[in-house]
Length: 314
Picture 1 (cartoon, one colour):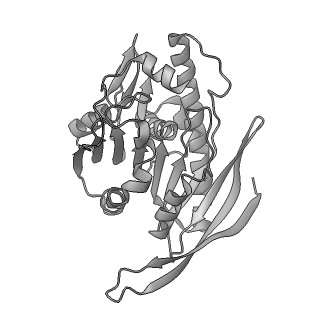
Picture 2: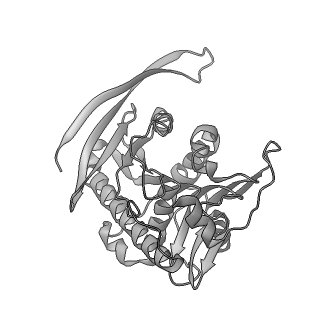
Picture 3: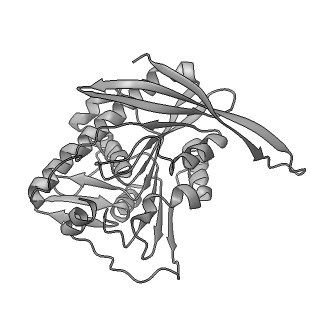
């Protein structure tokens, strides 16, 4: 648990927003920590430290990969980490156990039950990583009231499910330090999964930024339900948050696919920084809906079936 590998990995030049357009060199350091050992699994996190004095907000990142693959240090995600760190946010990218890895395709009902277990394992690991950050917050100069979770695809599901567990005091909640909640959630093509009917939030959720394409066949944009079990996507979650008066921002792209699990990290920097500034740092009680039409996208089906999820992911 005390193994720490520290390496200065990036030094790059950024343009300052001054009238003279002066240039500032900023170094971002990366530290690798073993945050938990669970059975045969050693779980690490990479801490990208922003070059900012004083206490800093922090974004925890949960990678995507359908709970069968992925890694905390995938090259496609690193520019997103650098972008956040360059703007003053520490980033912590975490390992988590992949509960669907190596699983043979079961029947639909058996699959959904296994999927529920898989998500809970990932949430448990996210909570363990969060506890590690909280334990080291003073040393790392992290503001514990400004910790945000950001996830892509399976990581977005994990992020939303973690907040759902906190709001409903679900059994996995006991893995997280008592009284803690995240300052915000940023989900790129995510959903909440339930085994017992439509999801209900017992307490108000943290402010939530939701990116999704309405033609996603890997994670439902609206919902997918079968025999009381189901996945409830960004549109459904946003409608609930709206009714509850909870701050949210739903960003939909018409006829877009599951590519929204990655695109926002590279193409929606304005929206991400605006959310972090207004919803997290300023804590403004805003509710926004953005519906984008890209005329270059072909028309695609926008309904979702349980078989869509299984066939497109496994």
